[in-house]
Image (cartoon, rainbow, N blue to C red; front, side):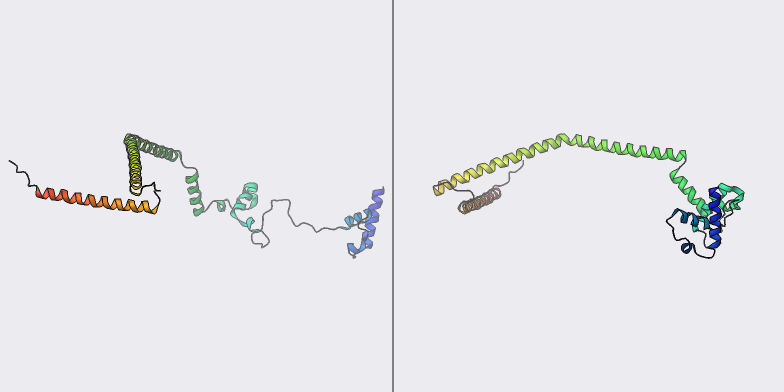
Length: 227
């Protein structure tokens, strides 16, 4: 009863304030009564949608989004509504270029069983060749290992011998310097280095004279006659 009376009063108020904007007519918006009055006077526009059948977008309209004008959307409509979508099924078939692209993608990502088996065989063959080449290289290096070890030991002995000779030569030069100057010298002193350079010069001169003498003896000695 109270509800029907409220509706009648509301209708009367809406008739009284007809032609006046709602914002001016209903001032106590925050009140419960004002909110109900606004709700009762609201008159929305009718939706121009045909809800009795499927929604088919108008491709000639500029208001229709571009994605609703594509063949993909047509396939979606035909798959959902069938012949009610008024779409020709022949137009949904991919073009020659699209079909070639689909076939190429299927060959790349979903190859036939024979192709997969050939690929597996080729990959196994490549891995086997790599393994055999690696084993061959290891075998060749292992065959060279004894000679490499012997060369390393020979180089080590040669290095040790040279160090020993240098040490003996240095001790000999220090002894000669002590004998010549009467006191021990620092091997880094300029005087000692000058003495070493002088000795080396004399050694080179002696070797040169010895080489000349051997050559002169070979020239002077007549060759032995062969019987």
